[in-house]
Length: 516
Image 1: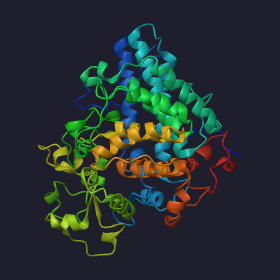
Image 2: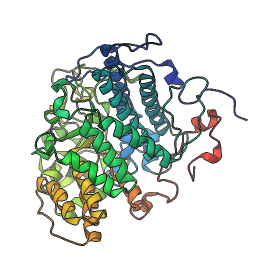
Image 3: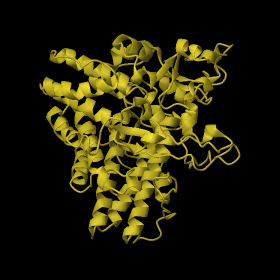
Image 4: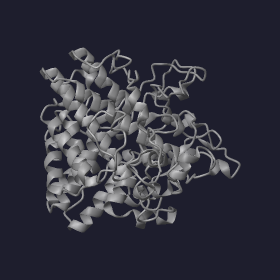
């Protein structure tokens, strides 16, 4: 029999706010804790508590060695775990489909999502929306909660659902069917959309906040994952209707990932980091992981044991994780895509050597997971680190673009095609292809257009954490990934953390995801 002990949500009962997220776009001093049972009361306190939710997302997506953003990429065919075979085994095991329920990464990101959700639940329970400003805060908190639940059901399937603040009395909860969680996600987002302002109506230093367009894009994605095609393209078309005024594609694909385009026209939903702290090896806050720079960028830069003179291509040496896989290189080649999108995503070994780079690896471990490509997107660009920092590797300002406008266009194209509106699908698809320097696609049958959209998503969204989950929802994962170890009926989801099952009286071992 299980002991009646606290499970993975225990840390949220401490209800402490973090104080990260202080990018140049965000100059606030959030309160360090929930000061009393009436807190927050005024507008300033409400905003401060809201920032705590963004802080928690920054932490969860960038937490050292336990990043949700990083982990979402690993099971796909566009990346390999990289580094050495024995380096950070929890990451390696996700990549190799040998992760189990005690994997520290999938356990940690589960914890991170629920910390953020509980933070929103407390805010929503305590805040009386007695003016327009607080109504905005409430809508934003609902959208943040909805997004975190969407990430959970995508990665884990059925998950415990609640809108109540977690207490000692209600801490044990059973898994809620995924379909029921989707209903609640949709309701939160629809309520948020009715209140939230458009992005350009926000002050320039607050455009990190979820806007109406961001909530609409989230809802469109939620509909898409459920194959609710008419609903998906209806809400995504509302985002597209603002093209040129609120959202648009960046002219230069290579700029999308850089500081110059932070919170720009292509950014729909973005997690902020900053290089302004100027960390060094002595003061970098590895634990509890409240660093404000994006340390996972250095993880994904070219490792010195394998690559030499990476400055020839404008990079700083990194730690060699998340190496591009051979499949993504071949996919670009098969598409005939060798233009700005290719050059902004990855570089072949041949081109690296031609630019003056060197391959310096000597041992088999040096070449672990190396498929003769170097990452360019979300890599260690010297221009993205603090130029005055003594240790540039620890000071990358690169933000995670969780939803960008190109994704909105491709989601709309997919929904239009599946709803038998191919002409509208082609319009949105060809916008993305034009920016990539590719010819417009002509009219074609539904099945052929479906495959074209899949290929476009593979290339456009490479290394952004979409590929694996796209393959799963399309039913293509077994065909594409079985040679890498993917098992149908098991690996569509991460396992429910064993610590959760052991300590939660409402979840038994037989409730675990199949195969774990």
